[in-house]
Image (cartoon, rainbow, N blue to C red; front, side):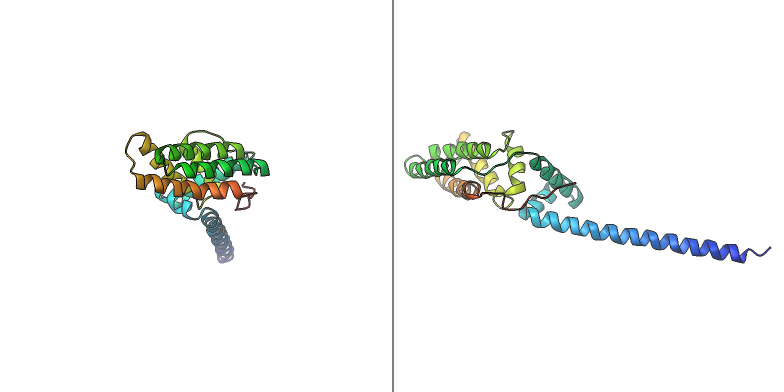
Length: 193
């Protein structure tokens, strides 16, 4: 019997299988890089923070995609003009009070931000969940929220200087300005599979 013909067929089949496996690997790698680039662009500095927090890009990306899915199910809305005016007036008033009562103004700013988020439709879970939720639509200023809130917590513990309070107001102002003025999320929501 001549087995050379059979060996050639097995060799050809093996080459085709290897080629298909390589092709699948290349397509997978390309899709993975594209997904990473999309998530990195969408979340900006929040992406790097998530990588540090979760220890790997894959775990961070999975967490960020889960945030997108969660927030995508929420009914986040823009403010009505009258609501925008009311919040802006409240902010301007508490900023003026900062000169005479910096501690009171920072505490009020923290409360006003929470009320603004609630009015826009963000759920009011614990702070970490609120920060994660707003990071989806406001990835650039979410770190301001974390910094300001950290100072507000230190204030409640009696451990914040006047300079810290000034910084908290600046951080709150950045988040406030974006959340009160934005008619729609600054980064278009995409359907996430």
